[in-house]
Image 1: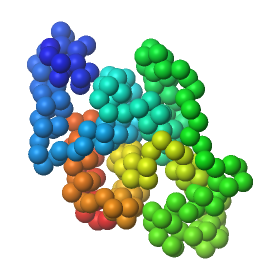
Image 2 (image 1 turned 60 degrees about the vertical axis):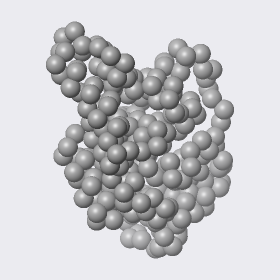
Image 3 (image 1 turned 30 degrees about the vertical axis):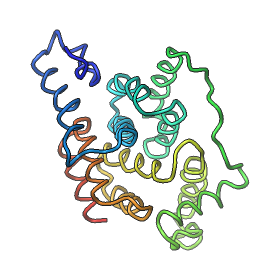
Length: 240
């Protein structure tokens, strides 16, 4: 098994499933990253893959991929922010194992925990700051949406501003472009959330990403989430 196979987490399958390991390692480790139509900057590629693995609950593959991501492109702070923000889209019930995996890998590499704090809001300022992010990403119609939307949704809409955006999107460590990229990848990787995937494809475009970039991101995560969810993601981009 060569280095590419190791990079794709296939070393453990090399002895028991060598034919599969060879083909998957080639596809995910060489063909997809090397395809000119799918090429992404290395940092964005790893952000997308780690977010997609969170979205599809691929914790074993996440463990295999994280050391490579840390070696090649991402800092511990960036990785932690990918894990933190996932809670807003996947829930702590699905993300908790990724905290454990990340902390174990960072500790084994000699990284002292906790990392430097990235929080920029207080409990008093998170609502306004989070709502401002919503407006910047989606448009002015999001201004105080808990007041202007259906009254029965007011509490959840307020939580979206305070918690989803105010607690996560206002943090340091990742840019707005980074955060919308990983959000799109969480959503498409879990499947069944096409309206939200379309909305966040639109937010990516509003922030300056291109349709071509988003297509490339989907192609880079395809080996990890499969064809049906990837094809649905492309449709969401088209619809945005």
